[in-house]
Image (cartoon, rainbow, N blue to C red):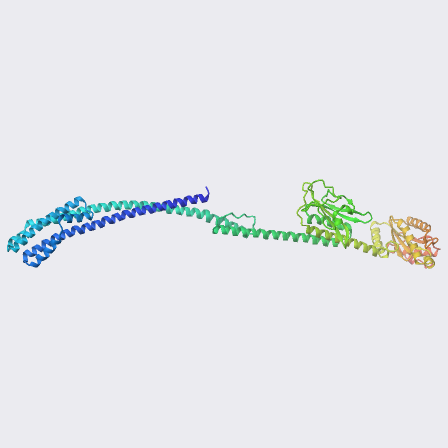
Length: 614
């Protein structure tokens, strides 16, 4: 049964009992009124009977005084009082009017008749006294019979009052019993009403006040501990408890909103921290391989639940080529032309199935009708460098997780900048390390590569060979045909060297001099390689401005470490051999001489040889 039904029944019962208690109290009051009326009636009857007795005694006394004194004044008083007396019937009717019963009236009537007889005797005594018969008059009013009648009148009056007292006491007792009965019943009903009221009050207090307050107190304590998972009880009553519950609900909703905002702020801070750390790592990358490792490590954390691929634009093939992937994407091709992706054509994020439906890119093989994907173009310096592709992690979940597009755009922007910076760095490095005329590595690149090759050879206990070559009579081409012709000769020789550098590092050493490093190659093979290059260079036919530049020859010097010299002196030893080749008549290959021990036990190096040998 609902609380409202119980309280309504209790309220109804309380009202009924209250009316019942009031009715019994009214009945008890009526009985008390009857008791008071009986007492008042008794008072009136006592007064009436007492008045009769007083009148009888007063007349008797006046008559006796006259008989004794003979004073006419007493006769006058007696006559006035006797004239004021009513007849017995009138006096009995007066007593009956105030509520006397028949037995009581009979007793009083007897007293009145005796009083009338006494009155007759008093008249006779007065008459005898007036006639001068004093003795006779005294015998009448002072005789034994007269006194006996007077006493009988007093006894009848007392008997009347006694009966009146008995009746009044009986009525008062009965009225008191009834009054006590109704009073007791009223008190019982009142007690039941009060008990029921207290029970209802306790029940209502416990159910409507105490229990809600305890629940609300528990909710408030948990909310104070920031436990917003607690559900406040629902009290829709318009009272203080309902106001408290509503206030607590509002406080909880505000707390949940604050918690949600804090979680979003924390998640945003975590995402931005990841993006910042990823950006720092990408800025520190020295190669595309390092950049790929950074992307494969960070992107699954920034965009959880998303598989993807990183595509870079290959200008030579005019294709977007996959360079790395994570979490095994399934829907996108490994390579495709730029026109196959709407994101590359539009230059902004493209999502074929998202909040707004759009066209699916041609590079996607999407079979599910609800499959989703995101294409993010990588743009830096207004140039398209590649594409960042994302799709749901598994086919069971074909809808993208709720990752804010803002983070994805920041991610694509950072990746694009990193790729652009890395390519620009590679371009600048290539420009700094390559000879712009011949396309070969320059002297600066030689310093870096030579140190690396020498360290590797020393650790692996392997030999390193070096070929130095110089174009013979190069000044002749510049002086006779101009510097453009000289540049053509340099490019032609460089092309021959490029074709022969499968296991060789080729450099333009300076001017018309070139250098080749050949790791793990013996002195004999190095000399054979130099001879083959000399033959190829001699077979070059170069025309410039309609003129055949004629035969082109070159002189070669070879050296191998540690056969001919120490690793640190490899280039100088090869250069010394080149000088000997030029002094010997040019267009030839001269190999450095093996190291010879000196008399002191030291090895003779080419630099320490006599000047005539150099």
